[in-house]
Length: 376
View 1: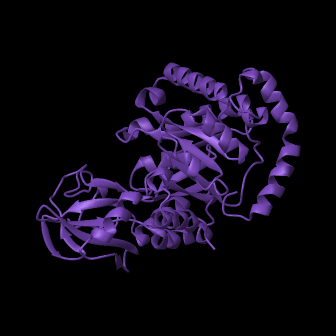
View 2: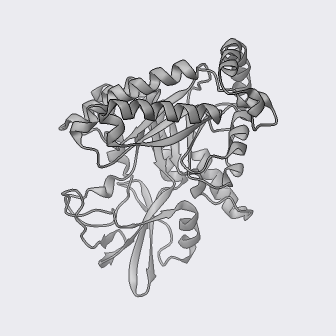
């Protein structure tokens, strides 16, 4: 499982099962009755052991639907669900020794008000136990004030303490922006919170949310900036083995206000959080749609060697468009960061954005995307 040999996975899982047997039995007797298990195999309603860790973790973010049945389960170690709970998915994931954690938004009330925080944790823990899931992934409200985020470390610590006591082996994680801005106190708060989490997911995209120097369409996950972003967290004290690199399985469809040439698509200015230009209003396009549009483009696939990212140009209703995205080549380059920085793993945002149809060409491209997540 993850980016390791199948045989190694089986050996690791068998040892894990023996070592965690007592813990699992204790949890089952203290949790809701095993007779309520939705799985055909009752063992699949048991949480995975704390020892169930891999040299390279592979997280799959899943936004909903039943397309998960076609994911590369031999590679996934954790699936993060943000859509409707699906007991069939839980049983399937546990059959592959993959954790199922739920993504939950954290708002100001949970950070500031101690009573609301305690209630939130109790309620989430109850739901996760009742559904036999393995933990929680925290999604921070993007408009939280810096003063409010000072409470984040204590919140993550509280969640960790209660979850680990109630569900041995449970997993706590949260995601952070692509770079740690050391000029603000927010960075130090995120670093402090990371000490209480199992994993910290670094969003290696959204670089173009704040464009300060020009207003041209560009890669949203430029190679050099993503490398700088990872380094910033490590320099500030985040344990690199806790860091999960999230790569995008989507792109952006930029409408050109002025099209000069391929790679020189000037956008309409859109002020965002003080920046004079941003891609915040640009259309978000899943990888499957990009692959359908690419053959119809006027340029074909182009490559920017500085940003290390593909793009193409097409025309619609007399307007030029430039689509920047990531594909197996660009993702493979970014997976080299796993070894270079000794990261804990990688994730994609989102797994359902690939094409899982029966079309053989689409199937090949989707397989290449999964394979690109595992560095050689």
